[in-house]
Length: 171
Image (cartoon, rainbow, N blue to C red; front, side, top):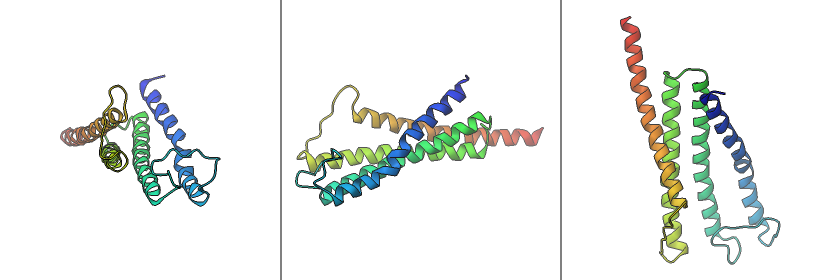
């Protein structure tokens, strides 16, 4: 199996594992809102000490919005991997897909960092702790790096496409 096929299969696996979360998360939040005393779903959301309040709903919706940004980035990356398999590396579609992937991942990472900062101000009396090892901060920083990398790839593909078109005209 070549590397492009392996890359595409890994992205497809991650994408399809996230689909149930996208589909069922809003319904789960509605269920918890309508039945706050339920014991079927273990809720591990801040601000639910006295039931599912407006803060908990805001936290959940913010988290879901950031997850949707990540999911959209993964969807664009999936489309990009499909173009790699078809050997359409130097096309306007690749430029568009890599740019969208980078934009979604960068927005997700920056939004998550802001979200974590705001959440820590409200839930931990303004104390922010940084842990060493594999922490959420490290993962978000890595996601930011991946997002910027895809933006750089988009720019490189755009330049390569322009050179290819210019070369096609001179032949």
